[in-house]
Image (cartoon, rainbow, N blue to C red; front, top):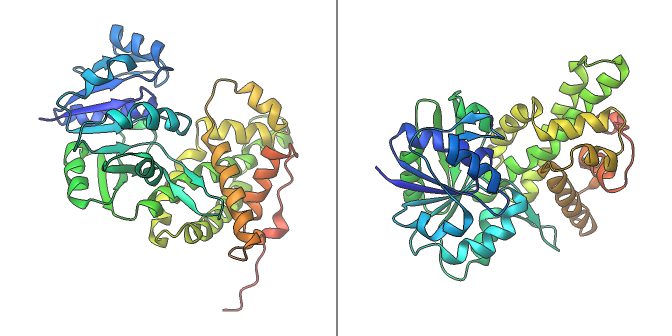
Length: 345
């Protein structure tokens, strides 16, 4: 059996210990500087205070100062930090990765460039590394708490080295964790990153329904309409990113599961209920909201591409509206008429 070191004691990174331990592998979880309390709880009781579950027996836990020891003998490093921890990971972890040790990241997101190009995080890490490192990533519909509960799901590992991807798949795959493989890194990663922005968008309908009914009662017509528009815009954005259109199913599956709960739904519901963005963020103080970051970056990229004549803002009315809520503090006013189309074929 192999040794897998997970850097980042967040929910998804920690949940990945479940399929690994099911396959009998040794698992070491290393906390970031922000994970002190989580590591302390895990060391004492194996209980993850955010995941609200006990992790499997046999997992070892390390503080960030013990990273070097935790990497000894490992055959895979899993990057379990959020997008907000990416810079820390690049500065503090990438330089000490042992030669030949591949990296599999759960961090979802992308960075926009001055020319409107949208780069996946594996591309960003590879460019920042001062020596060759095999960076791969996980995409697809999978929530951390349901993975910990062994609810069946299907994800995709992406990277530039298919043989290494096959080895990673062998480490993780179980009856409840199925793994596909793809060499289209940007396509996979951009597809699943975009779902964060659009899960927020769909959740606006939930908040609007709550506000209209005066209670937590959901209407599904409006949610479905926003879901459909989200898929349409994600398809266009995936093309702008340069990813294979077939990856859309990964983003759509991830969009579906994200709308049902979690941090992104919370911010969308608050905005839909009429809470201004600044106040909503204050209510969710301490919660990392990758949906906000990806919305801002994607909208900025589309505006640049529009200015260059490579895209049209009018093709992305839902994205632009969500960006206005975030960057301009506007109130929700879904641009329903902008979604209408006339197709003669």
